Amino acid sequence: MEIYKDLSNPASKEFEKLLNSKLSKTQIEEGKIIEGKINKITDKFVFLFVEGLKSEPVLDINELKSMGLGDKIKLGESIPVLLEKIEDKNGEILVSANKAQKIKGWDKLVQAYEKNEPIMGKITSKCKGGCIVEHIDTGSLMFLPGSQISDKPLKDISHLMNEPQKFALIKLDRVRGNACVSRREIISSFKKEDKAKIIEKYKVGDIIKGAEVKGYSTFGCFFNVNGELDVLVHLQEISYSRVNHPDEVFNIGEKHDLKVISVDKEKLQVGCSVKQLSPDPFEHIENYELNKVYKVKVVKIMDFGAFCELEPGLTTLLHSSELSWSKKNTSAKKMFKVNDIIDCIITEIDKEKRRVAISHRLTLQNPFEIFNNKYPVGTIVEGEVVNKNDYSLFVKVEDLDIDAFLHCNDLTYSNNGEQELSNYKKGDKINVKVLEIKVADQKIRVGLRQTQPDPFDWFHDKKVKQTITVKIISTDPKGLIVRPEGCDMDFPIKKSNIAINSADTRTSRFTGGERIDCAIAELDMGKRKVVLSIKLLEELEKKEALEKYGAEGSGKNLPFSSLSEDLKKKDKK
Image 1 (cartoon, one colour):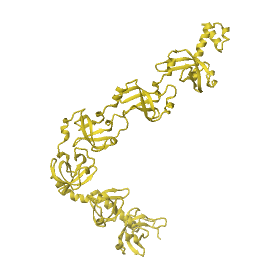
Image 2 (image 1 turned 90 degrees about the vertical axis):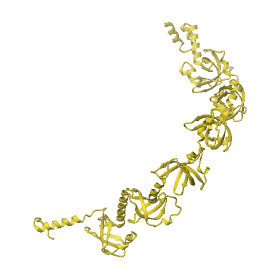
Image 3 (image 1 turned 180 degrees about the vertical axis):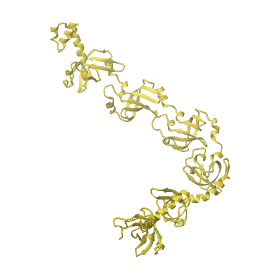
Image 4 (image 1 turned 60 degrees about the horizontal axis):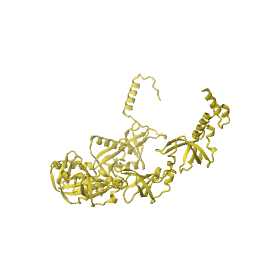
């Protein structure tokens, strides 16, 4: 092979020119679609010639046939392929005709989507939520949602399968390479112009005669007008009375007159009303007076109350809070049934909000007023325990539909209230004293211990700093529980009130059952509060000793360790 060292001679320049021109024509790059010419065919493979490649790419004949390119398997035919790798690990060139077809097909779909042009396709199969559509030009597969197959529900689409037809591209996912199409938009576009001409004939206020009930929904009823237009009557426009579903008023196939209340030329929709063809019952609401009893009809029962009619078309709400005076969980379902005629009092009329409020309990005598008149505060009555919780009892008196509240602190003077609560159960008969009545708040409070002598009265002739004798009932690290002699109540003595010296404040000095003296540190008969202290008694005795014995020697005989020091301090003063 001759090596050219001198590039200045004419032959070298001509060779360089030819080489550059050749390389510029064939630009080979991975990831691009190139044209390959068939130059050899075997039983299983097709060999392609691509100018600029060092070897011939190979395609599977079955792949070409599955793509519908079987008629192109001829010598000299050109097939577009995607160049995946110029050289793999085995040194071979990898190309794909299938991927090249998909990329070219996707480019066509993108162009059609951007230009808002329809494409030709055919429904090839059904899938979850819709169908699969094949693009006729490129073979690309697209998704057709079930709601986009037609402008009306279709039970059978067998007549649409594998039939070439137009579809509108409604969504393209460029990242995932997914396409979504619609047949419904193509159908609707043809009908849109005709529907616009039909809607032009209607204006607000027109009366449509003999519209036929076509179907229901949860929000209204659809009517067909002269076989050319479907209109909606919203649930609120069916009747002045409360309607929960159109089937309560209409039957399929019935004919009714309608009043046009809205025309939307952009959405091509006409809204109609049935109730506006009859007088509005709220216009003569002045015939009704506040705080007057009226007969109403129960038309609907809900969890929060009941809807009632003062007259046909004039519906009002009877809230559950206005059913009964009782604070219990009152329910309209337990008290009434549909079509019952009951007494109610009108409590509010709001013309602007078109709202009328009524009450059933106001027609009944207030049991709290009855109780207040019959059992004023201070009365002792017999009641029955009807309910119980962690801290109180609820007591029913006679047959009144109210429960009086009895807190555990009002059960006993002597024991712990929460412990005493465990001694009572539903059905027990007890005598209670009425402590408080609030008619406006619907509250009654009673007490059990108030019916018994108050053991705290034992202190009525006692005073602060007076010495009393107590019996130790129990001990714990926090202090002592004691009971004064002749009293039926127990009181605590805190650890800090056991002794003057901190070393003597330990409760382990006592075993329980001992009789000891202590002093009254605090006493409040109104609040029923008393504080007992052994420490105060020691301080009082010590003070008395200091005043009685002035000599230091005398003080040494007293049973107080610090008395001599206190006497020295007194002498200095």
